[in-house]
Image 1 (tube, one colour):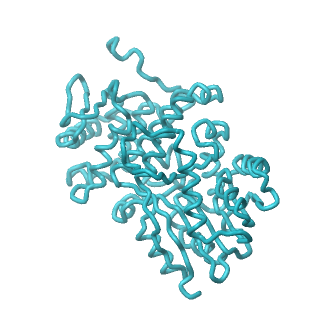
Image 2: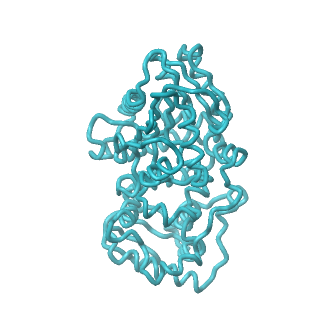
Image 3: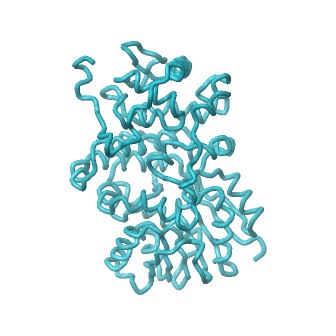
Length: 427
């Protein structure tokens, strides 16, 4: 190892046991190396490994530890690349933004002509290096509470460091073209964009003074507060206990405690009827098995003539079908038990299992890319304060990768974010 790599990140394996280098397998390592060369042959990026560069040029990354890097790729196709970043096996070259580097990979997935990074012969062998979702991430009532808590109860203070003052943890809606230069994305524009998003949801659901509103997966209550400020009566439910406590404090600080009730409650256990049912970026945590249950619960809670609006991260239907049983880096490290649906499957499930009709109101993929860039910039800027909360350098790399990986997905069109209106087909 030369002096060039003396500052390379080394995770505390006792804290991050999943990042211990996997046992080396010469066949898997050779296969990973061959796959990497194949990917790079027409990739508009540069991968430098053992002082040799691959790719067509563009955003650049350098592999510091070739053996562990290839071993991780060969051991787990779904998580290896991201785990190698967490472990410090590779970094973007100085001056290269992490999301810009990940964008060419995401574009390969989003291309209609080429949604696979690997050659067909390698695709047929993916099962050897692809993990299935573990059974302990089942989204029954107990499992869902554990899965949600692992993310949303990490630290209210940590989220407060990079979200806007409303603590809205979902895509904002910008009034300018969100695909404009992301380098100009500013924290100052985020608060208004989040309020614009909240108002768009409330308008679509017809929420006015006196409306009875159910907010499923209420987060830190930004939407519930906004609805109450219109004069609505709101029941806001979550299964994240620390999140619920802060939501209650925020509701009190906003002066709307008389109009908003926060309950630590699973959506399956809610009773009553409401004029509007709202659920923002909640479906991704429900799990495929429970999508019919989720939409049935929404339908049962809607009063005659009521409207529901969900905001959902979605992916192309064919990619959802291809990946729904795999265990990805995001599921392993960020959202256990999660699965991103497609618009097609939302329409299919609502048509087959409910009397609801689904209508896409707007697409917000590029808005989400801009939101994520602002969050990541803010996260990095406020890292000293986050570190003081007890989070280490590997956690920082994990969240930088998560935010950049997500941004790249939205920029490429591999991911989208949609607001969907749900109404009863028969009154």
